[in-house]
Image (cartoon, rainbow, N blue to C red):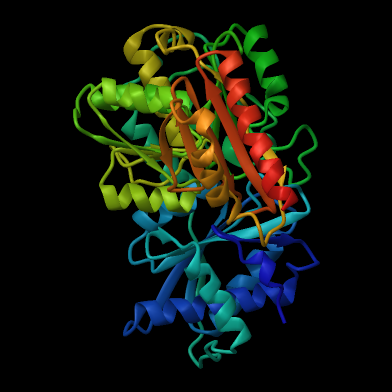
Length: 468
């Protein structure tokens, strides 16, 4: 009836016209509507917002979903082509919404599309996404209603631009150098350049035209090769900052005036320092892949660092549970509860970064000069069968503990998401991907030699486990 594999940990995602065709989209819409009625009982009249990214199938999927929701009596407010953060913003700014759907393939290849789904103001994930699949296969979906739902439209971009411009009106073009923004032919530049120009900044925007074929580069700012044009334009224009967005602009990439990449955990250091100047004791959440220097810096500056599991929905939920000020991932999902709504918004994160540069009156590279130098690998992916990937990290932990040669080098072993082994001079992480049949690894050391030693130790033990 429908491919179970498209129901992922954090969203629903599939290949257009294959496992994500018109029939599948109608079933997903009706299952979500049925779930929403159950969640909203005894409320009988529901209203949701629907946004969409620039994928070639997004508009078609919007029409299918809106039609299906109308049939079961749910009012639809279409907010049009927009970044995912604007779908989240609609849940806080449009009165009496019961949920929302963002039609987006995010940073995935052009042949993909999918749905980020909200109940109330929260994005569903994990078991709640699987509930939608169960509703479909068990035929627990609601029937058509005599009273159809209305389909209307709202200009969310204008509302969002006005709101964010007002929030940062104090910046008032505080520096003259340019800001270069690369939307990667996604939807981020539908709003970000206008906000910055409203605030008096000079903006150079590249690859701004939304195009679901992504003709210039893949829209993933965490991959260095995707930032090559951005780096070049920053240097050519003597810009103060370069910003890259993924396809739906919920993830940020940044480079400094020298075209050096500022990774997600380094951005978190800058944001947390700024917040902790006025909010000592604030909780700051990072994921298991973040550098130890980030957690140490948060503690040094009077914050409470919390390490948590990878995954934007998991991090967002942890932020809410802990009443933390901010949370962030290496992938560029940054969640501000401080002065904001607590969801991941790369455009808002851009403004907070510009604000820090204005406040400190120094170049971005200078703000990171006093961070201890470490050597860290990029994310390493190690193919692993689906039926083994979740058990391997626990078995690895046992092998590490049994190794007497490592006994005096291990300071701690953290198992909140895979296994993160803290050594005297660095750490190594192995965790199962929630979206692919791979193990994800990352290593950090105070020297290249230590980093590579920890990597060799762990990879050797993984090879032993994979052979058994």
